[in-house]
Amino acid sequence: MGFRLLLLTLGGFAIGMEGFMIAGLLPALSQDLNVSISTAGQLVTVFSIVYAVGSPILTMWTGRVERKRLLAGAMLLFAAGNFLCGLANIYAVVFLGRMITAAGAGMFSPAAAGAASVLAPPDKRGRSLSMVLGGQTIALILGVPLGTWIAYTLDWRMPFWIVGVLAVLAAIFIHLFFPTIDPSETVSLKNRLSLLKRPLILSALVTSLTWGIGIFLVFTYVADIFGQFGAAGQTITILLFFVGIASFAGVSFGGYAVDRFGSTRTIVLSLFLLLGAVSTLSLLRYIHGFADPLIVGITAMALWGFSGYAFNPAQQHRLIDLSGSMSGVVLSLHNSFIYLGSALGALFGGLGLKYGSVNNLGFFSGAAVLLALIVFGISYRISKTETVINRTEGRIE
Image (cartoon, rainbow, N blue to C red; front, side):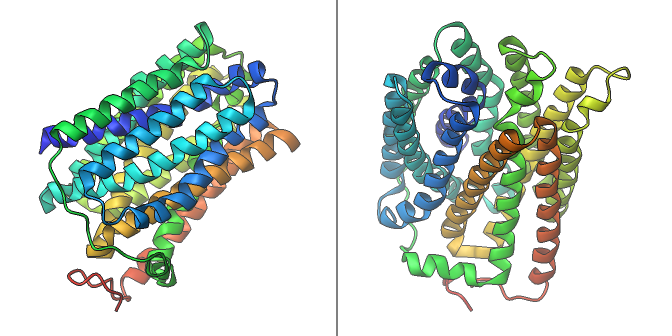
């Protein structure tokens, strides 16, 4: 099982590197393509919107495709989008490339999570999900700082070529070594969306949405948040390296904590820690004379990585428990809600930069995380009274 999960981890690494390195590339990209930072930030928004809307639709269209073929094909589509970004000399081409990468990622991620849950025994499911998500955290540790450094020392296009090559390699390895997994029962788009009529499922997914807003509202513009204190390319690279290490620790802790203490406690703890982390980013301007704002800020972002990545395996585990045999559908909706949150976070952050101050982004993010805590509390109360989706037949009761 371990080697098979590593193949999914490699795909997650490529997606994570591309998805997170964009924040470090925005200053160089915007200058070269002659667009504003807020306009460049919409490259995050378009990726997230295409992912959010496209993932459930593409999951439905590919519902009858054997999982190995689907995973390999999704990686090739993801690679094509990255190669297009690497060839771009105008903003519109990068915009189109990000749309294509989002489509590939939107097919791969829910299929990978579903495959991981099938391959793992029930008592190891949390750790198997965290292992797949670990690819993205490894990308934060190694890929994102490296991509940012390459962008500042060579060219911002080069990291896209590197990610494209990694995605092609992942597709080849999955095709050669991944086991054949039959697709789960195909569900129409109407039935997929009907799941949102259930207060239990909807409230759980809105928790994912508001968490995504809080996470990406600050991360998309992390270079601007730290730029006010003199941080440039090298400092941002170091920052992202520490964030990556903390994120890897967080996803490992999240998988262990779910198996040991349950998803509810893990989710609550991670959200409270995240609330403290993002709020601290708006307090950095007030600590001059008491502490180094860069050191405190890097510490806050490390806590952001730890708590943010501890949340996701716990949330996925909870959604699988709530949805039973419909877990593949609900996980695709979960990913869609996260990326919709990413789009809204980037949009709100861009508006905050345009009409306000970078110092307010942490407070805006904190408000979103606080809302996530409130919605999760509502979802938890509903779960005590509502009958969950039938686990054996996959139908709504």
